[in-house]
Length: 155
Figure 1 (tube, helix red, strand yellow):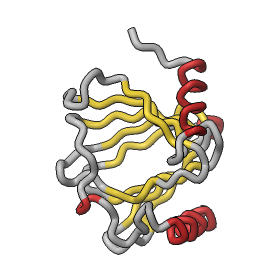
Figure 2 (cartoon, rainbow, N blue to C red; figure 1 turned 180 degrees about the vertical axis):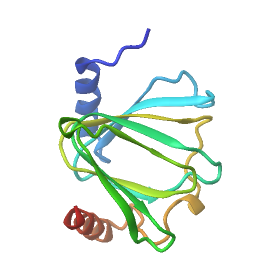
Figure 3 (cartoon, rainbow, N blue to C red; figure 1 turned 60 degrees about the vertical axis):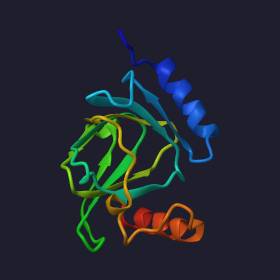
Figure 4 (cartoon, helix red, strand yellow; figure 1 turned 90 degrees about the vertical axis):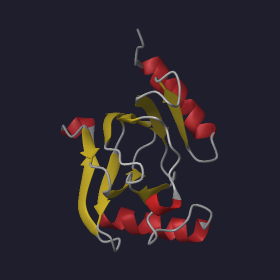
């Protein structure tokens, strides 16, 4: 049996805080080519989750916030926000399911935030056509900082 408890969340969060990307996965699936990928994603404020989609290959994505606060954004083809939602277990909003091909992104609002994520395997790194062309590349730190500030202002 695989157990999700406070100790596992704390350990994964500690690793996220030490990571240059300010996030860390803990995989429950044994192999990357498992038919269903299940993982914890511990994330800290300041981590950049570039807007993306899962179109090629086509995969729905489900995540459940175990603790913390995270904003979820859906975008149209031009990068305009079509929906936004604050996941916050204290407010009774726990998770979201994103259909394949829908542009989406997350903004971490609280330290110690951890989501449980499920999507169809096998694992495939996001290809360039799945990265939102209207969003800054992770390497462009100034543009990323401005983009994340813009998202915060919208909340």
